[in-house]
Length: 282
Image 1 (cartoon, rainbow, N blue to C red):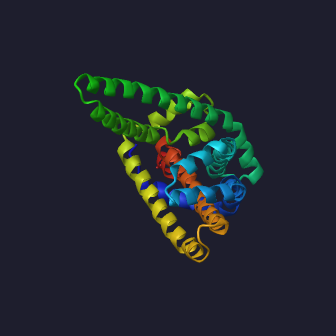
Image 2 (image 1 turned 90 degrees about the vertical axis):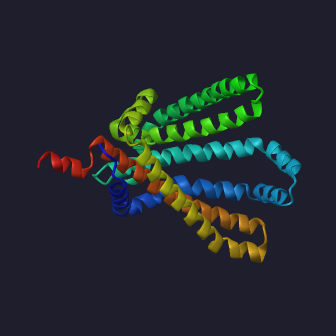
Image 3 (image 1 turned 180 degrees about the vertical axis):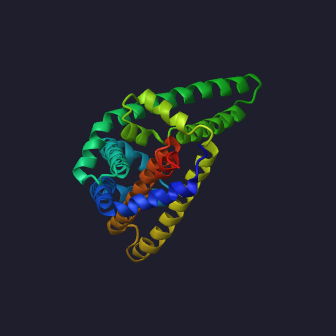
């Protein structure tokens, strides 16, 4: 099936509008709240890090990160876990035409969490192994002809290309796990790969446009809302709090939209979209 980006976007926006009240609740709990909590508890640390970067003091920045590694990892892993549950819950809500409650959507998200966590572990290990293998192979070959530096650059380019391609091929893993009930991480990855077959370039272009749109909105919003605060108060705690609130709100909306896009893209490529069902009876 040929992927139709216009239809995927229209269906995603229709799903978001139809469930906006419940989606706002899910977005606030799993996307906005973790960002606000990390901002509140790490305001002083983030302020010091920003000041060290502005003063071009990498030694101070490295010391701050080393001394607070446990705190940073704790909030980082906690935020990642909350976002994983959020993506699963939003996908469960959007894919269920029976309009489930917040609790029901979260319940489905929690049941699917072990599968997504296993996918993350497999993906991380595969990325590490691919990085080591590609680096050793390419850099080793180029070193033999006395061009080790060029080999290092080529290895980075090849790795970035491979990671980008893999991110497109595995972009439908969450709806595969939630909508199709595929619990085995390898099977979920294989199913996403199969669904995106013959549509990788179209999906890459679509995702790239979404990413550029997000960056543009985030940049303009930050400039308009955070810029005046920083001009008046400087790079202090208040500026960090405002930046955290703005970035958290933008990130929450973007995450909801992205989950909706992936869900509707999955429905379209899997043949579950309303148009596909209707055409069966025409």
